Amino acid sequence: QVQLVESGGGLVQAGGSLRLSCAASGRTFSTSAVGWFRRAPGKEREFVSRISWNAYATSYADSVKGRFTISRDNAKNMAWLQMNSLIPEDTAVYYCVLGPYSERARDYDAWGQGTQVTVSS
Image 1 (cartoon, rainbow, N blue to C red):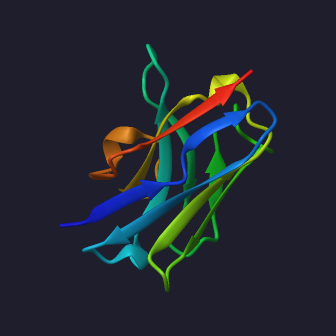
Image 2 (image 1 turned 135 degrees about the horizontal axis):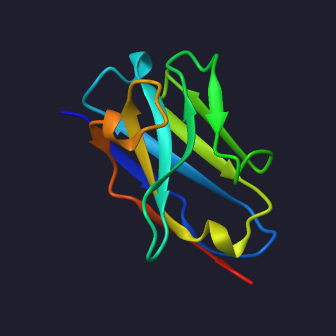
């Protein structure tokens, strides 16, 4: 059974940066893609970013492209989401997921508990 633990969320002013971390255990992290999703208050869960098992491929939602960067280190069973130039619309609970290389939430069967990101204007 895989366990994912996110950290790094918090309160930041618009224009600031945060780096989210995802620590994985219990499954072969290095052969799975990692994704980040978020859910804002009153909104549906949405795709943010994904990275393939070997880090050769990445993709981003249009709303975060150019501001967020996803990365991973298979030797450490860790993944990160560097978030720069944050805007209030980025406020949400962010979830780390493990599974196939997909932008669809339903394709992932391993989810972390989420970390809150709040961007003040």
